[in-house]
Structures are given as C-alpha cells and as structure tokens.
Image (cartoon, rainbow, N blue to C red; front, side, top):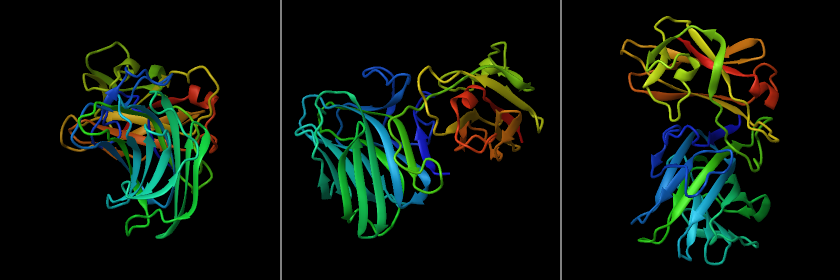
Amino acid sequence: MVRLLTIGWETGDIQEVVMTGSGVIGSTSPAPRSPSAYYLKMSGASTSDQQSTYDWGTPATDVWVRVSYYLDGGSGTYEATVLKLADSAGGIQGSVSASLNDGLMRVYAGDRATLLGTSTASGQFRTPAWHTVEVHWQMLSLTNGNIEVWMDGAQWIVLNGVDNVNTSNLNMRSIRLINNPPWASSATACFDDLAINDTTGTTNNGRIGDGRVVLLMPNGAGSATNMLRGGTDTGANCSQVNEVPPSAAQYVYSGTVGTADSYALQDIPTGSWQVNCVDLIGYALLSDPTGGALGLTVKSGPTAYESPPQTLTIAAQYVRQHLEVDPNTNASWSTTAVNALEIGTTVR
C-alpha cells in the first residue's frame, strides 16, 4: 500500500486521525470546498506558531503531498509557512511557504533555515481563497535530493540535486500543517483534503492531483443485521451509526464473537470522480475491561472481506482500515463498486 495518509476531517472530529498540536474543526468562514462539510482550522493571535502534526508511521524517503490551503492573513504582508516535513525523530527536514508580500512560494531545508528555491510564478495569497498545494520531496542521499511544488495544477518550483535532508536521518514520517502569522496578528489558516503517497507499488505512487476526501455514511440495512441497538434507539441499526461527529450516545453492540452488522452507503456525489482509495472508519469501545476486538468489514460484490481484528479498550477510539484496491477485483476502485459497497463490523 502506498497511500500513507488520507484526512478530510469529514467526521467532524479533530481526532479522527490522531493529531498533536493546535487546530479545531471548521465548517464556516470560509465555506468548505464542495462537497466537503468540514476542514482543519487554526486562527487567532498567538505568541507562537500554531501547528497540527500527523504521523503516518512508516518512514519514507520519497513522498508526494497534496493539501488544500486557505490563508486569510488579515492585513499582514508576511511569509507564511504552509507545511513542514519531519523525520522519524521529529526533526524538521524541510518546509514550504507562501508569501503575502510578493505572492511567491519558497522551499527551505529545515524549519525555514536554508533557502533552497523560490517560485517563478506568483499567486494572490493576499486574497483569501482555497488553493491546492502539491509537494514532491525526494531524498536520494543525506546531501542530494529533488523537490517539486505545484500550485492549483501548475508546477511552480522544480529543484534537482539539492541538499534537502536537514537531519542525520534519511527519512520523513510526519507532516506539520502550520499557521504562523506575526505575533499578535489575527490570521486564519485552513487545510482540507490532505493526502500523502510514497512512490512504491503500482497505485497511488506519484503526484496526487486535486481532489476531495468524501464521507459516505450508512443509509440503509446491508446483508447482515445481527447486532443489538444501545443508547438512544433510532429504530434501525444503520441509523445508530451515522451521526456526525460519531458519539457513544447511540450505537450497536454484541458480546458474541462472530456477530456482524453491515450497512448500505450513500452514493458518491454527482460528478466525475476517480477513486484513489477507500478508508473504513469506526468508533468503538468495550463495555467492560475483559477484552475484545472488532474487525472492520466490507462487502464488495458477493463476498465480505474482514480486516484483521483491532483490540478495543473501555475508552472510545477510532479504528480504521485502508483499502488501496477493491478486494473483489484486486484492481482500482470504480465509482460503481463504491456505490454498491456495504460496510460494517464483526465482533472478535
């Protein structure tokens, strides 16, 4: 699997993917990118940088990053860091910035420590708007690498044979999304539709392009309806598990190993879509500390495919399963297959 990370914040929960640092869920001011409903938002005056860190867990030397970026810098004309890439020890390998002064983008080794390159194109960053930023950071050795930066589908920076490794570790393992206006300046930075690829394998192994992370919620019964309803009874198992953000106020449950529930899903929104990957997301807990696990399950075509059991605790937590390809065909997902998909859980 080569998609390292996908986040759209569409569950409405800032901890849908474990995050350290600052940030809240935004839904207005600015308006989301349609058909999205939510995004990551960092705003307000601060005496230090606001940043959200996401660790994808598997060190890589060659990654493509795609993120939607909105900067309302107020009346400032400063240079704003958009993102940083960090190594397995948390050291900053490189950073990318956008200037509200000259409209240029810049790439640095370290935390804006050594300037590596400046764009020849400029953008209207002083006019708040959503932009799609793509970054390719390739480390060939501790002193040699290549970088690309794309803005709204156009290549703005290409650097070959530059020293883009700032630490003694030849890897990257996390991304930091940043809001760093001048202190006491009220500015807002928003992020959406984050995706990170490495360059191995046969799918999702290169430039990502513009796109959306879309949340499809249960909207009907699937082929298995075996769990019981707990909390507020909505009258159907599928409506016990389709609130945004997820909560433990209504849920399905079972103490019997092998019990399964599955649900039909909303269709992909109208339009022309190419599906890069599918992520199953569950929110679950144990009712007692005696132990238990849950297998996220997907039914594509005639067969149900269950992911390896994930151990639960008495505290509610997110469980996820990433599906790079359709398990029914072992090929890339089609919109038809996603629209016909059933998802659910199996007690283990």
